[in-house]
Image (cartoon, rainbow, N blue to C red):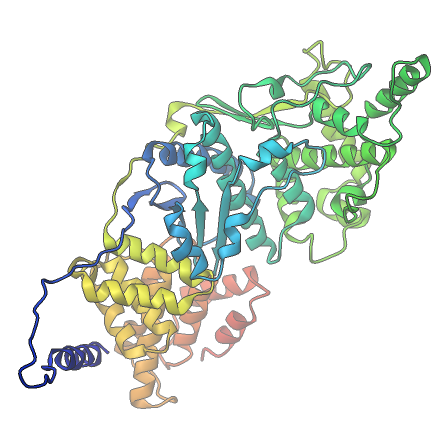
Length: 581
């Protein structure tokens, strides 16, 4: 491939260098060389516990603090429940771009509509038009079997406005963390988003700070968390603790008071009727299982919803949030594990009481009573909430020390790093040809990149994906010889190419000798050493042994048998193990 490219380049240069014919006595004018340059991103790079980070945004302090806060949030969820763990072999990647990056990373990839996305408030949350207009926060994420890549767009207009620094940090960190956590759920569930869980988590995005005052005669229990300084007030985090808002009386009373049948005015009858509404509003939790796990589609805005229907929606939204928070942070390990399995299977079977009982060992009414006994106990020492059946409106879910905040620092990015990560973005969002061209261009222009094992491995995988097996094998052999590449997919591809090369030379029915088998197995052993166990590594391991008469050691037989039992849904592994002689 390289020889052909160089030959083509040579011919092109030669053709351009040929003298042009000129008429006799024609004057020849020689101009100074004109150099045309285009502005380039000044990329910066760093690693965090969950991400490789690339940023073209000219505010390293802001991006660093966003990533520190996002890491705190993700770590709390990840440690609390297995549902929120990214089951991928590589750390996720995130690219921060500004307005200059829209054309290249969104428009050229066919994703230009993503720049106009806005967060929608969940049910029971009041978000005024003014608040939504100044929050053009956007994270777009894609994933494959190896990794996830996120792109975060931060317009200059947003960076230039007067939003306080801490508020920017919090709202961007929660946006990034929620996208990451929801992708974890989507990957494990093997389907699109789980609606009720997404709604519950999206409640953390915040609401407008300046909510209207509650109407006359509204409930006496307040919402202290929502009086904090900054707007994203469903959620609170600092260097010491993280709190979640469970409900907001200000928002909810405002929603109820806008119903067409809400009693208006100051007459005696209107006040009496309002008090009755507030009594109903403060009733104990009573949503049914199906109401929040299988919510009905929202009605159009033209339909005027009554006080009763709004109140029912508020209760459902409250219970959905409490169910998620309790099962993630407060319940015992048995319930947390049941919750993870329940969510993973929620889109594979219809949810009902018998299914719920199968996972949790009790019906939902019994579960609800236990859950709200916990929340009620939290409010017993607070005069404002001691008689409230819902308990306090906010809960502390984590305490931090300085060691819980990762020490992060940007440095100038190497071209091999920017190219590798940007190429991954293009590949995962569907622009694979563009991903390859980005790698090839850097390979042609950068000596440093050609000596970076991680970059060479990325290019080798790209070549293999485009059917260029010989160049792919050469690049992967070079990259892996360094023993510095932590990428199981690359090691598996090297093993596959070695096996395919041997069978191409000696025939499909060739039985591998011990030395040949060692050559094929060696990269797979390295892949197994790196990070999470991959089902695909075991599949290739079994497939390699199916091509030899060398007896499989007993410990490997037991290991493969254990994996078949652990992954009964993997028919490919089962078939490959069955073919071993």
